[in-house]
Length: 160
Image (cartoon, rainbow, N blue to C red; front, top):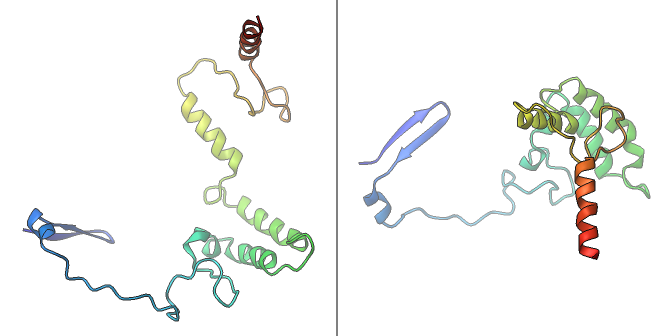
């Protein structure tokens, strides 16, 4: 016996084996290319930007939505030789807005450091990984002397 249960906004439908054995009587309707509600992708057939496209991940409707729309529109409609080169101020405004909401728009370095912190929890000492900043210098990638020495040893053995 099949039944339906609702949890919040979701409807959960439980079906029996017998329900799956009977052929479906659902009728498929051909897509109407003129349907204004049909998903068209990021760029609509007339060349406009589809701000409702799920590919934008809600960026157009968040607290920095207007700044995002200005920057993205500027880039999309740019006619400059270096596309979007005239849009730097719009992207700067968007970035400044996003920095005001770090919980909604985490920086890549914030995501990497939180991932490293979670994975290193419980370790007494962990060597920095290649590409991570060393405590002495933020601009120089750190490398482990152990891995370098062992790589040299391997190369020397191979050459012999």
